[in-house]
Structure formats: C-alpha cells, structure tokens
Image 1 (cartoon, rainbow, N blue to C red):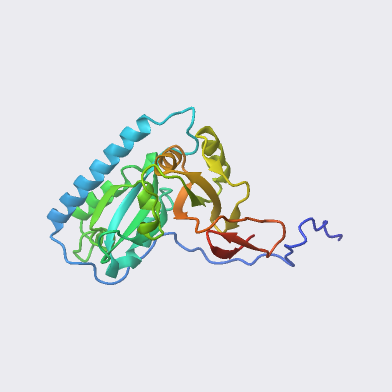
Image 2 (image 1 turned 90 degrees about the vertical axis):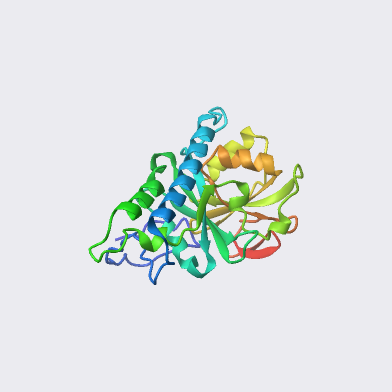
Length: 267
C-alpha cells in the first residue's frame, strides 16, 4: 500500500497508536488538611466566594459585546498555605471546564500561594457548592466531604490582572505606564486574543510561539488596557513582563527564539 505524501517533513510517526487505560480527570489530594472549625471556615469561604461571583456577574453584565469574544467567564484567585501548595491542582475541574491558569507566591505573605482559575459562567456556582457540601455532608468515615480541598483554602477573591501576573511583583508596570507583556494564552484561543486586541487597539507582535496547551505572544499595553483584554476574552492564562525587546521566529523546527529575555525552543 502506498504511503500518503509527507507534507510535514519535521513530523513523522511510523506505525499506529497504542491503547492506554482510562485515567480519571479527578485530582486526588493526599495528606492531612489543616485543622479547621468546620462551620466557621465554611461560612468564611461561602461569603468570600459569594461576593466574588456577584462581582463577576456584574462585570459580565457590562461586557461590551462589540469587543468581547470567547466563552463568558471570570477568574477566581485562591489563597492556599504554601505548605499545602500541592492542593492547587485540585482547584481544576475538567467536566466543569474550570482551568488552573496561574500559581505564584502572594505579594504580601510568602507563607501563602495564590492560585488563579478560569471559571466559565455556567460553572459559577461550582465552588460555592463544594463549600456547602463540606459544611453539610460527611463521608462514610465521618469526615467532611471535600475536606481535602476546602480545608486547604484560606481565602477567595475575584481575579484581576495582578492575579495572572507570575513575575516578580516589583516588575509590575506602574499606573498608566505601557510595557511589553508576555501573554500566555490558553489552548486554542490565540485568534480570540488577536481579535479582541485589535478591537481594543492593543498592539501584539506578529509571531507567537507554541507549547503544549499554551501559546505565548507579546502585547504592548498598560494595566488598564490589559485588564480590558482579560475581561473581554477567555484567552489569557498568565502574564509576565518581557525582559528585553524580543524577536520571535517560527521559521524552522527546533530554532531557538528570544522571548522576554529567556531562550525557549519554538515549535
């Protein structure tokens, strides 16, 4: 049997695939969680999540439909003790399309980490229900349901540009000052970002580089413009500051590109 033409000379696979057993998307958090006064902790988180979701819905209600593109949603920022950092993976939920996008130390307390997730509007009540179940239901062994995750959450707030910024906060642009940002884009949403940036007159570099589940492109904006870009799309996963004026190249497989002062291999 004749082989089909190889129109991608840099990518060629011989033979077929191999079957693998099903892997559950559920994240299992191990170890003992911090001791909590159950009702008090549930009340605190319930209020925080409720306030954040209410603010998010107000912002979504004022979204400019002439500018916005992508799935309607918002970001929630969680504070988790640094000693419990492994629990951040439990914030992601594939069936609910909730994606963990950025993790960083908190700006004012190195004993905490900030973990930010993108939440589609249709999953807005997901974390509130998690907390309610923790408050009201027990496992067969008598422990609160969802304790492994909920007991490790210290606080919750509505996410913003700073929630997605994973560089040293000393590099965060001053109010009104434009800077070149590395925009780490969620999988499959680069064109959405381009469209919204064009409508907002935010300058993007022509070329991007790709990694598994992320594209990276450079944008020239101040904090206010970047906030509008974030609020009017579902595209942004993470933000950093470009350390020098970069040159991005995708001319050949394996060629090294300069992005934000670091050498990364383009795809």
